[in-house]
Amino acid sequence: MKLRINWDALGIGASLACAIHCALLPLFLTSLPLFGINIINNLAFEIGMIGLALAIGIYSLYHGFRRHHHSPVPILLFLGGFSLLVMKEFITNFSNWLLLPAVILIITAHLINYRSCRVHNHAHRDDCNH
Image 1 (cartoon, helix red, strand yellow):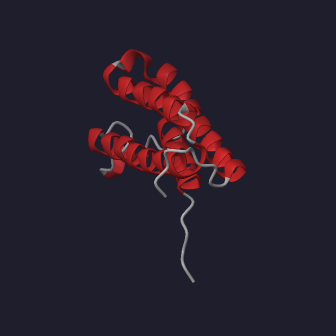
Image 2 (cartoon, rainbow, N blue to C red):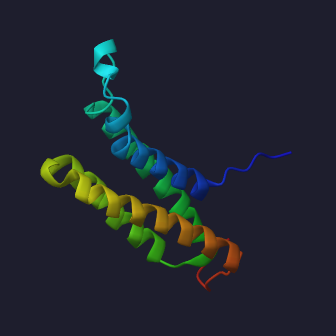
């Protein structure tokens, strides 16, 4: 039996984990620095989460685009959300204002990709080579 990974579901989960980390962790876990643990403003953790979102997003959206629906909409939504996510790291005064639309765009891109892959189920263009 072959194990199949739903990359869109994984991308949605990673985006939600990022949103929870950014929004709720500072509220509930402010005592972590007392124990020597600092993941709230840890640049390495932030870069890791952004890198994870990028890797999963690129793979799942490209796979859906190439093999199933050929619609650029999910990729464009993802790139918009990812751009806001990266901007959040540089424009720290507006990081919370940039986070919500970034997560919404990324999750929407994965949902549209997931639905489009299920609806079209290998609806190929003439130039497909598979």
